[in-house]
Amino acid sequence: MSFINIFGLGEAVTEVAKTLEVAASGITAMFDVVLSPNMSLEQLAGTYSKKIDELILAEMNKKLDYVGGSFNVEYANESAFQVSYELYFQDENKEWVKKEAKSKPQKMSYLKQEAVAELHKKKKVSFEIDPPSAKREEKKEIVPKKESKENEE
Image (cartoon, rainbow, N blue to C red; front, top):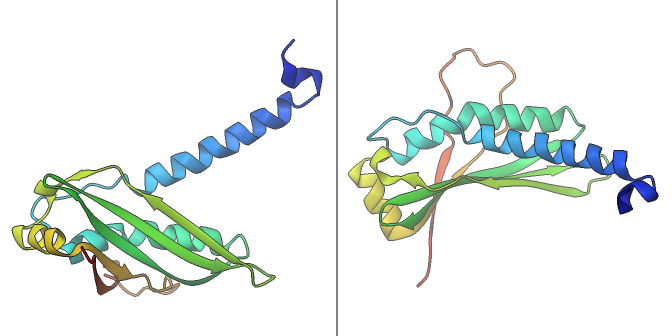
């Protein structure tokens, strides 16, 4: 008999583990998109736009109000970059809720030379994430507004 079962926590621990597994698979799925070679940073951000909108809408269905966020492309090293997002919500009590995740390193070969040069120089390029539009007239994905942040060295 395990220590957990002595106190009757076995089922609760199993449920928590299942919940964490589902949450982790959702984050992994977020970054599981097909990237094309020679993309600009704007095209890269647009590639993730639909999945980010779906994530925001799912959180809004949990009674959270979307306030804002950013999609980030960060220089990892000479041959890799990473993408991440930070999303900010408020719950019914006006308490802040932050959702964030970061991808595994991606090959620089997915990016155009200009994009690689920009990342190398700035280290991080951020795009503002607007609220998802409930009534999209086109299937075309909306590219978030571009903001640049330069790291001071």
